[in-house]
Image (cartoon, rainbow, N blue to C red):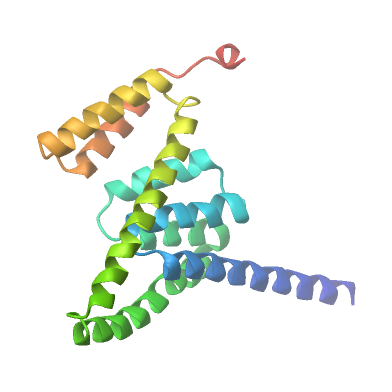
Length: 198
């Protein structure tokens, strides 16, 4: 009887964890507008702040690696977090939560927008959302910059930001190359000894 109760408790907690994965990625996927980058702060809110599945540093590493790989970033983040939390079933639940609502809404909304694309309210709606996406991206950048002090330090981080801006905007170097170079720099940087942390 006791084993039966434990079994039910494990099944309930497993079901609750799958439900939380679905809700987290459904919520971030359904609200993000403008593609993958706008969804990153929303995923961070769910994964780091609401459910505490990983730290902000781990999330930053995951975003950097996901950016270096091809494909939409939201699905890569959902897949990794789902796999990490609940294995293959978690991966499938998180991916379904990100992809299915977006596909359904995209089909419905594109039909409406195509029909009314010349209307003033459609143009106004798309233009009004752009500042919100900008604020989300600025919030994510500020959050990562606050934590840069713990990793590379302010000076190196600001130098990297400046160099990245010049390389991407002036020399038109692809962002994935910059991310790979940054990861290489971090991996080759000598680690601090245990006594230096204190």
